[in-house]
Image 1 (tube, chains in turn cyan, blue):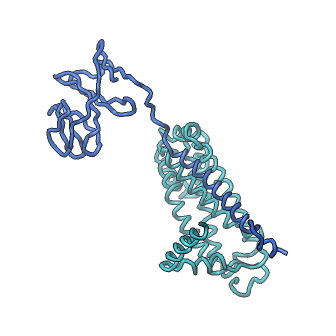
Image 2 (cartoon, rainbow over the protein chains, first blue to last red):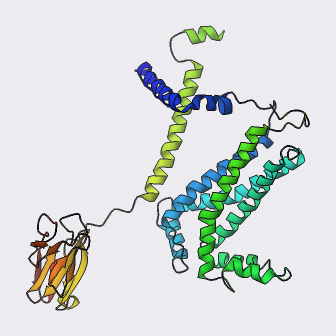
Length: 232
Length: 145
């Protein structure tokens, strides 16, 4: 029976490969992809942040099923997720823990790239997309923090959106632009919601794709032979 | 030395580990699927209530009321001929009909199916009459059984 299952399995794989050429891609990019010898923990942080980002997308979509982005109902809908919905507490806690660990891992990733000099020529664009991704990660955490519309998130966002205020000339305009008003108001919640669930994740996906494309084009940097070839 | 082991009958180490890892992955996947399904599945609907009493004062002459009874909607209409009660689910494609007082008909908003107050189809695509709901009037109270 095992043999018979395997035959079908192989036939399906071959059917797909004939029409897509995906086997070559898997061979080049996965099973026979060459990396420098003696890679260690520090090389795993980029992949780890991608993994956490994926978890955030999944748990985020689940929260989106019950969350209501309105000042009247946001807090109650979050309470409903925490108390009434089966495993809601787990999904939301995972989303919160994921956001914290993503900041932690992303900063460790940046430090390792910094100290190993991996940002140097020809990897400057990879580094710059990574910097943009760091700021977007901070931005997605910042906008997500307001969404429960609790006392904590309301006042934390009040304080944080005050930060650009002292910038000469443009400061007050920036604050009003972020808040969508003089103070935190229902429009603030809606624009933060739009940024948190659509705009920032979409830009992050695109930048992460560019980041990973460049890693595959340039190869993993090897600190032991900095100026020779492009990796392989 | 490993050759002898893998040539004998039974399970070799590689096969054992493959099965073990697939089993663990499958278990993890099942646990995650359980969380996803339980999270998304709405709570079961309450079908306990056997009787529903509504004071007739809640449905004054010339008005209608939609209530939930045994997990299904019921429309009660109070017209010149008295009280009638139907399932408002249109027999065409399942939209909910409403009472149009001026024309004294039950109108389905989806494809303009029209029913009279006996439930009979008078216009539009519905293939059969509205399903009536049994009720009694006791002491100024409508009792749905």
